[in-house]
Image 1 (cartoon, one colour):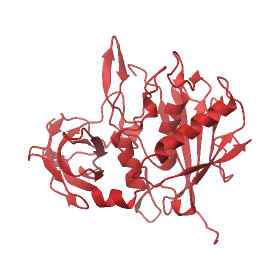
Image 2: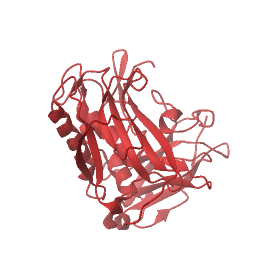
Image 3: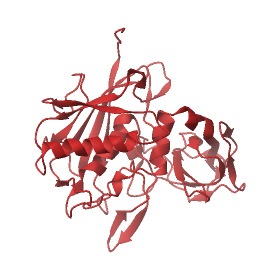
Image 4: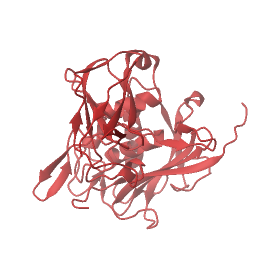
Length: 339
């Protein structure tokens, strides 16, 4: 086997606690030295992606329970029938998460205040080949600043390790944050509720295990990155542009909804307002556009806030039902929004 060489870079993403008052599937991208946008992904031709678990016993349960929780979280992604990504537990290690260039992708807990910032449940940092976007190493830490549980029914006052790990493993595989999220008011609080994508940047909250189950948005994202042949053949894409006063709306969020299947899949426009959403089931769909909204911010999705346009009202594609055609791109799904 030939040795491979890499020009190395680092990419970090975190899951936050939702603090009241303070989505679309989205693939992490990187601009290579030659100016091309490349998507971050593992080279699966080498077989299952190996990961290690730090051998320090967590504060709230046994090391064995933590390992089982991590395996369950990886399995949620591997069970996607339309994706080819697989994993392999390579063993325990004394290496700590966020100790890089050791050739090990490590998961574990930390009390390091430089890592465990206030409100951050966990974070993923990837080592990538900056020329190709290939992920060559990725670590995940979980903060000891919070109480954790592995109870399948959840436990009051604790965060579900399986749920948070499933989100972070989405980053581990190359997915960015999604804006497919549903909020409801509970007294003076706003809570993330069932139906939100696992990759939404805020957690479901203490005692909740909703984050263990992937949504259509999550499944589409991982399948676009690591597709089976059948997925490519049966799915289509929509493309168009979001404008306001004739000018492109930077980083507008689009939601594609199939009224017959109930599937909801999102995507983002680029900085010119143009979008191209891949991996959509065939048939008629409605297309809605909305701005990035509270409690999220453009930075949660990797977009610069000084460019992102959030000054517009929700709008629908008014040209009738858009038709998704397998193995084809339906173009001209343009939407004009109002301030």
